[in-house]
Image (cartoon, rainbow, N blue to C red; front, side, top):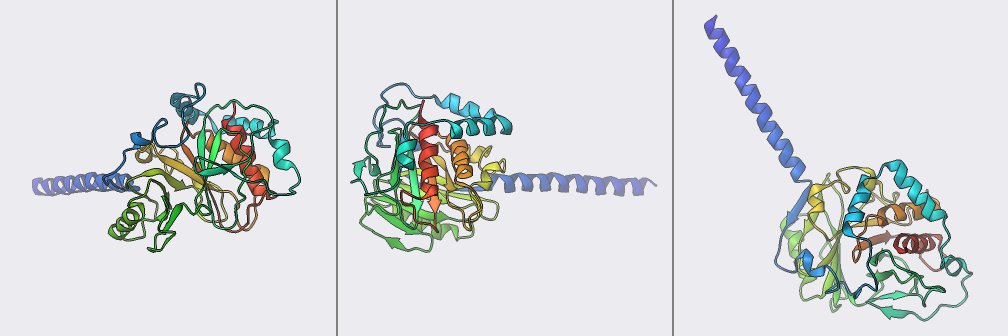
Length: 324
């Protein structure tokens, strides 16, 4: 009888140790949902304020980072109501955006991007941000900005070195760069080598991150101004990962990196969303973007000329998100 009890006790202890070990393994698996590699180069703080983001000093106080952080506590209902209210509100540039397209206006170069002529009425900015476009078709040059956001046209601008995860590099002499995209399915050491090679000698760049195998991969490299988390699981979605708590929102590991930014698919294929629904999603995500930070837009299937309903949705959303 005593021997039997001892054996049972030993079995119980073994099971307990197994549970503890399994729990630790689960914790380690959770922690590895973001694969990270630190390299020498600029720190996140090097891009804060007006030093390197190119936006210059703010003309007046902007919305604080604490106020933006507090938005995360909103309920889904409140977030939807606020987005609906902004989308339905009038904006000074709506008439310009919706006007029939006649002739192209000569673009004005501002901070490495292109924007439209000054708005018809002065607009006070709540925040000033970068809109980074990863458009693999056509993107109109003179975007209708209210002056509170500036565009980075990474694919169209020859100043950008274009790098891909297969090792391909286009426009190798560009002053800036983008890497499309990190992927946990790729060999880590090879991807690090390719990111480092892409970033070498450049002034500023972007890293796009695909969520694969339930993980992000963030490869820190010199001069990366923003690490864009692609919030769409495929080309049929806008930002489905935005609603999966702990993947992007509520991800403690990503939150440690101040330069992680969202990227949305603004023209899902095949078409399944109205322009107003796309605009609303952009407004929602943009509300979490802090002053002098970034939001990204991806598109693969449709040319984005001025009569494109998808481009109009982006312009309308950004103008509403950034104004006071």
